[in-house]
Length: 560
Ligand SMILES: [Zn+2]
Image 1 (spheres, helix red, strand yellow):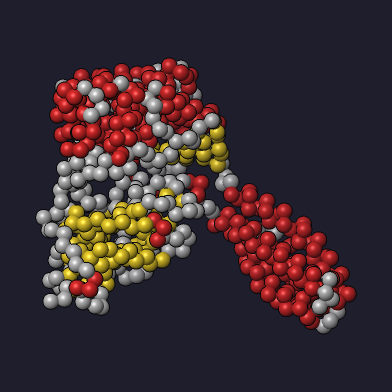
Image 2 (cartoon, rainbow, N blue to C red; image 1 turned 180 degrees about the vertical axis):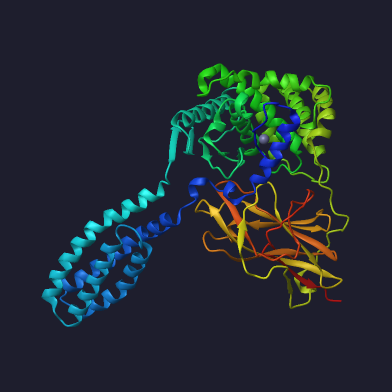
């Protein structure tokens, strides 16, 4: 989906190709989850130890009360016996750190204390408790400091402006500040000039990673990610071939649309990229007016990369579909005015569309925004470029009551039940092909092995499960509540569906529409049944070559 990095040649073709390359990158789970969420093993362990500290302290206090206030050595010894395994776990978590020795001696002290208590040596026990109390007191800040030091990964830096937070790794302060200022200015332009509903804070992750190519993409909500293989790739486009300033404006353009229009299977990729190209070009012009040429540390005349470049591209003899789409958005803005676009996006977001012919309603909503003749002419040109229809399956959706179906149900599985990896899929879905075990089978449930990530509270909205025919055309759609998936340990989740008849060969497709802060990891095994795909209904399916999704279909035959 969603990018922008382009060659200095700046041709539309190159622009589009790289966008698609970035779409692939966005399916990487690391891309779907913010960088800062990744923890080193050391950090995770230290954080777990810190999480256990309060419990250990409370338990130890109970031991102290039993001895000092109640003089009940036997009860204290029992409480200590319960405490020791927790302290052992803390020690295991802190193995190899500078506090290991101290924790080990504390644990040994607790063992000695228990022996004294079991022997009824209360006075000696009290003395030892004083020593242990001091040891614990000096240990706690060291353990907490260890966790804090590790949670800020080396080189991880946060640069904040009023509405932007840049987390960067391996990038100089000058570039981190320039990125923050660029995104802040782009956001201001999106609000003031276009009236767009943009995030209160845009989060940017900018990371140097020699293993990656140059990539810029967004999560459709409030996050922009930049990865570059080396720091010199931040230089001006004449040197690197990468239009960073235009790129950030392009991403802000995507966010302005995507976070409003969640359901946009009707929008072609040329339409979505054309929009970001047009909006990004306009925003870049305004950013230049506000910030001037010195905005970027390796300063260059980036005004050339805004509408000036778009104008040249539109004047070409055969502009490709993405540039054509950018031209169509420009024409629409001229009819509706800059501030007329946001209300149209909101109107589009509210439509409930017949996906087999979405253009009817989308067009009507656009034409209703102003001069009917002018907008009607615009829509005639725009519809073939901007709209894609997802044809319905020729296999009719027939349903039955549960009572009309034979039991027991059959669970169809292509996976072996042994998870070896997981994926969150932005801009696509998890799809599995099945063969019906009989002539008259009905899908009654879908089972998914997964776990939710992101915000603590489950989002209120539903993900989707689709029954499709072998050509990925939709037969039926069912809601799949996000709240069915727990955070943390993955587990099998059964999503019951209204029974719908399946063709002999059918596809179950699951789509979570994830962002950086909301999504579900679906796990896969390392098998090779060849029945797992990355697809959404009506779209192109790509084979998933890492294994089989742990997604199963539950079917029941009809009674006759
Ligand atoms: Zn893009």
